[in-house]
Image 1 (cartoon, rainbow, N blue to C red):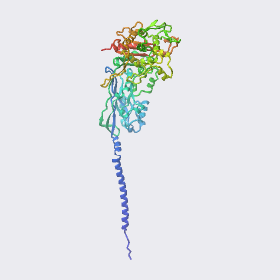
Image 2: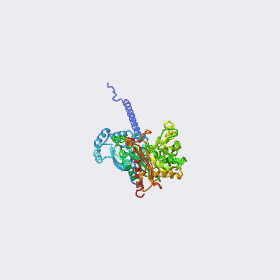
Image 3: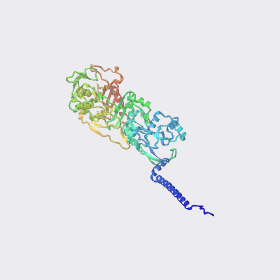
Length: 613
């Protein structure tokens, strides 16, 4: 009997198909959901992130450094300019192997260890895609070698830039200062957005003091690049704002005259315009070339400057602190007149030494031999100034006292910074009993007052301070803050008059006459400098001790080491009746003022006899 056999289980097949279909739909749905979620993330949630990453492969924001402002002298002569230069830089994000690239570049161009070390330091502090300079001032053949091998050097770029240049080199180093590469400590304090694309900053001098005006404002441009970082086109551009040009009071020809007059001697000269307080010349010798520092001075060259016993990096004009010696005597004489302790006719006996009441110690007159008998039996104020009689000023200092003496001299600018528009100025020391108590925790002694009365002891002044005090004398008490800069851009700032030193007209006349006789008197201490002079000069000589000498010893310059010899100082203004220029000179270890006043004569002659004067 034939049996019925089921060939197909339709119900089971339907169940299996339905299950498989459900699984397929579920898997497809999950996959589609994941795709949609990822698509949403890419196109919506993280759109800005990925767009930025994509744009970096194509569009870059490049900083455009501003042109640094130029510096001119009072006559429009260029003192600091900018010269085109080609800089070798690397964009680390585009460099495949940094060590290999640096090695290859070292074969193409001259790279010093300092260049590589500075480059690696800058790698640690920078913005993404900012080029980092490796070598400045590429030579033409070096540029050519890099260009030929450009295809094998991804991330390497050669950029044209303007670099600071000082056409007069050593002549103005201590006035202008210099710019140099931005270092790590400066990066910590700078607003880096203001210095993007800029690798240099003013370090000292006018360059540093007026950095915010000279630097300018950074510009920007968006550029389209290829995969190798090469610029294809500029999309938009915001031009940089160039720095402001600056004009100085300084006269380049007078500065050259001052430097030549100082020659190989260690010393300084500051000359001021009596009418404005502007600095006509500021010389400090020895000096250096500021161009050495612009792109980073080599370790060997810097060590030579730093370790030189002549300290050429030291700006003696504003940083050198020296006992002013007898150059302060006109100021102390004026204090005596104003305090009514003396008159021009008051005389003091001068046996060649001075003794405090109740003391056996003799304070010698340093302008005479220990065996001398004094300038005259009786010395009045005019002779005391003209012949630089220490005995007269010992007596006057004792009668004044140290604290009133301090109060009379301070308004002339001694013992405090003048406020000149440069860096590194030091304050000097104008001693008082309070100063000694606070600085040394000691009491003041009467013998120290005598030393202060002839500008010795604790008293220290910079050449700039002495020049300012001399200009104040020439102005009959009008104290003006000295200024190097005469004009910033189109603005011509007025020099503020800080204060007036009050004195009777006849007292100014007496001081003027004494200073005139220093130069033109028959026994003046600088009478030799007046030979052939066609104008009248008021001056005062000074000698500053470097080493102590026993009370009964005689100073023998030939027996003293050169660096232990006295410093020579001189202050002056001219012409006497209508002063135009005031100056101060110091010659370190010059042996005395005779080393200083010929330099002053040379500079004053050059100024008064210049064309158009």
